[in-house]
Image (cartoon, rainbow, N blue to C red; front, side, top):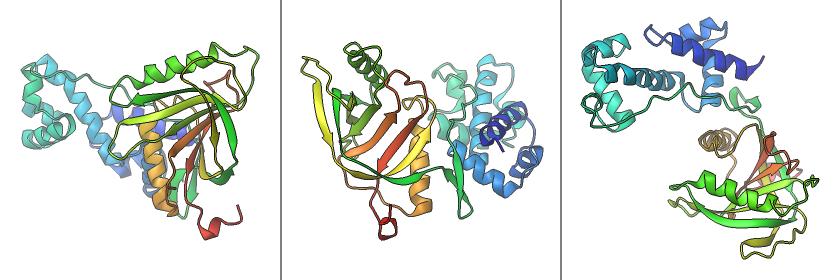
Length: 288
């Protein structure tokens, strides 16, 4: 079974039927799946329950209807299955922070979002729960040389990471085929700032103040595989990791390294990659 294809088709089915009654039973039946398995699959792949997702998409569908002002808010509520204007208004305010009348009065601007992409990653069944596929492994000590910098999630961190990565590429031979390591560290609790090292496991001669060589200690990690830009799947990774910890009862390691992203080839950063997240080594893991 192609899990990604099933969920992608389910998202289209939901979008095409937002004005119709939608339930776990009806959506699962549309894809000839048991509602129990579909619920677990959908939650694992999308990071929320089916009912939460349907609610978000109905609120999203209400945005152009509110803008064009041809329907009353009461009719919009009924059209999208909210039952009453009051329930629609409550849900809208919880989602967007303002009531729908503010949007209609052009006191707020909210842009509709397209159907979300389904992040490509393998999944597996763990005691009846579906979770992003993982392995528990030792990541040996390594020395990484590259560009170090700090980013703030509250700012334009994506552009900053890509700009500094390009600095490293500008000092490398185009034929280099080393693995590429992106090390994220020192993210303090309740802080949006963290440090990044973008580098390769060999010396690169760069006479710049932000060029560093770092020794990474041996770490026991949960290893995940993804396809897509980590800067665009951060929320998915966070949800996947939380589900992994809950289902496996593993614990995070008290390490200054938050996670390590590893590409097989520094020249192909659009390929699949692995994420190594440090966790505590439990007695049951001693043989790994």
